[in-house]
Length: 639
Image (cartoon, rainbow, N blue to C red; front, side, top):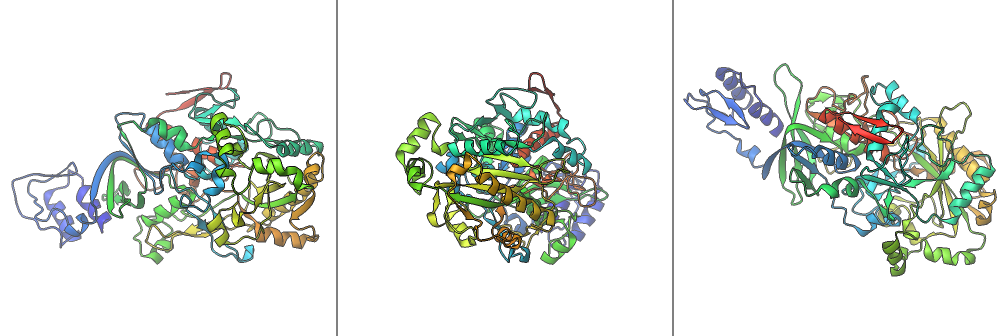
């Protein structure tokens, strides 16, 4: 009731006559308002009502009692993930504007967030939303688990920190999908604006931005062996996967978002340095339940604020003078839209939510990178004892010597991201860009790859059965430009109930073929010197799986997310678009979405960097600014 009440009560135009206003309010809320003639004027939320109207019950007690506090800000940002952190920092640069950033999760105080090698302890913890799909017959009736960060910094705070933008063609594809102004030349300035690349400036890299990008301080010797083996097989060496002056194809070491051996998340890069700003309000453990709207006759619905549950379980409101920005991620943003009455009409009707704006594309177009593992044991584990003790045992994260080395020097095993090196490959020569990414992990798990949901929840993705060991290596094959599409929808009015998610993986046969070729090529790499010297026995998939149908079953039974979910509120101009190229929700005033959900198609690389770019560009759009790059100097100017 509160949404319609606020709509009528607070937002009637001041030019409306007293008689008309009286009739509208009396007809809409007969039990709330009684009117009588009076010589006084009433001002409610800054709106002047005619002197001939008095509300003897100016506020419905039932509605008022729902909120323990109501405040007003210029901007309210929902979600402190990668995009929310960037936006809060950039929008609050204007001291005249107040910014409220609401985050459902906790502060990023957990020790393991800041230790690069600590991320396995975060997956499946209370800092993880622990999303899961429905059981899907195509995936042998398995449920897919998706770690998503529930903490300041979002999923970037529990990720493997790889810094990858995709190719220039990815953004040309965005333009073809109707995202005008989002081509490679349009987005490059915002990559450079965000970046502080320790390699220095250049046409495709920036210096002095908030986000530090560096080379791995202590890569494992096996990672170097992987790169050399790939070159032996005629894969070209690629020193920089983010340089758009050449193809993305090739093999090399990844760059990561680290500084002095510590994780750089959007929270540490963008939020913490500006927390002292008096116009910036950051509040954690605040679960937003709906967006509030008003609708005047003959106009579009207009966002006027949000309703949320605070850390004490009490309901509050935050009203806006300018805009509500939703940055809740590829699962959270469409969920919040649907809870607020924006989405497919049939879904809203089935839950009993009144439709504010019927947008069929909300929750559709779900895309993800999905992957499968190839792993080998070491030929002589006894020779790996030193490496095993230095890198990853059950007690690595608790060994004081290892921690001290990391803390004092920013080097050593705790700086590893696990995915240290990789390759981008075309499985078909006719492709414009690689469809396969290989990610090299200089560790090996003895656990059964057919792990269960309970293993994931209790131990985390890489800690199941406490059996992750470095005596060997793993090559992860990732479908980075998949054709498959999934979807999600809400199943309850309760904002704490997770949405129903259908991954849609392998709805396109091409994606299965991509991973088949990935396993085949991984096997070939494992037998190529010098990597072959670290491979004594192939473990997964089992060498006994010699037939293609057996390998296919292995893929379907073990494939997992590479944590790059996008597209569920996609940008465009067709009937399934949710936001326009200015990231405004179609048909709604003062409401934008800024996060990975707006991507029309998934970039061929990890999606943390593109999400930060989106938020940098969105801040300029909101503030009416533009940023341009000087490719010679690698600098960015904003006006």
